[in-house]
Image 1 (cartoon, rainbow, N blue to C red):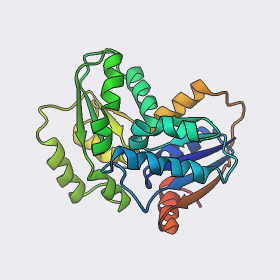
Image 2 (cartoon, helix red, strand yellow; image 1 turned 30 degrees about the vertical axis):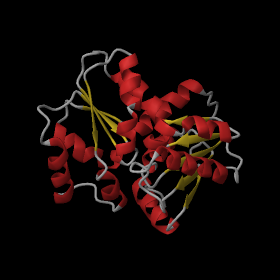
Image 3 (spheres, rainbow, N blue to C red; image 1 turned 135 degrees about the vertical axis):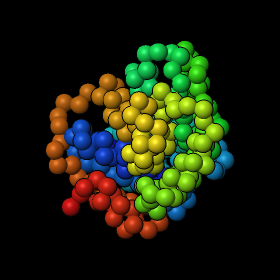
Length: 249
């Protein structure tokens, strides 16, 4: 089994981390479009074009499955990627919605969705959750988180100031916080400390692993997978972050 993981930058490494923890694939091909990050401020047609270009990149490998580890692409271009690919394509939005449903049995739960501007504007999470009976939904575009994570700033005074900027207007802590961008799990500890332990964090990586295990038959565990990292700009920087964050040698 060989999987391709696509993200606009380094955020998709949070999905790779979950995949590694569950030993699902023999080989992982990661592609980060670091030259054009972030996607969240771009228009729909541009996002679709970039997404199809990623599919073309993965055609250089014998990929069995493509994971779209970018909420913005999952919200806008998943169908187009599926039509262009020669293998199944799955995205993190559907998985995140299902993980939220599994975690919150109370349909009146207060849910806060964080994402890029494009993901929030798509209303992909709200529409899917409302179809499942959830009504107490709020979404906030927190695009400043993306460059902070890209610069490996995961906590400290700058993060605290950005949290204050985004979250001070909130009247109370939410019951659940959907991390609607795969960059955001890298600051999950800081978010949990800010909102408190009672707030459940919905993590894209764990959600997509859960979805895959239900959808596909994994008959073998791979304890020592091969991982190859590619980037459209400065691949060495991506590899350095990957090795540090994933604990690779």
